[in-house]
Length: 177
Image (cartoon, rainbow, N blue to C red):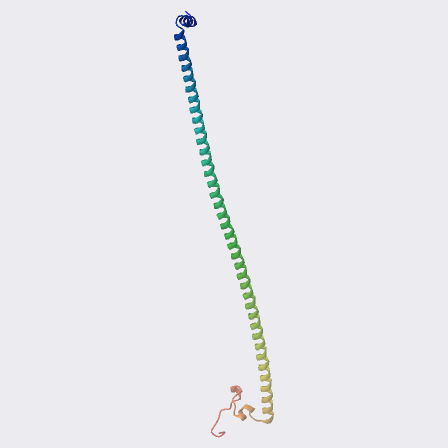
């Protein structure tokens, strides 16, 4: 038997029961619609909550990434500053080494110049000494020749000075004194 036929049968017998049943059907349908709406609203709320959580997680991750980027940028800046400081220190050390090398070279040149000057002065002094010795020998030879010619002692003996070598010294005897 068909349920519509049965419903129609009951509706004909008791019109109030049919209306009551229709009201109950409508109420049940309204309740089902309300439950569906509430479930849809809950579902939307749950989806919105998920979306907000995903968005919050995304923002947190983005914030962490920004913090990491900022820290890394600061580290790189510090490393760059350290590299620049080391480069400046290296340049300063190279400049100082060059200055010291130039200073040492200059001192060596000055020492070589002083040594050459001293060598030249020694050479000149030796030459002067040799010339003075030659002059003394000539003077001595002249004095000896003159003394022999005149038959006398060298002038230094007569003057009481002892400037000549021992060759001219005559042993003193008690007679000559």
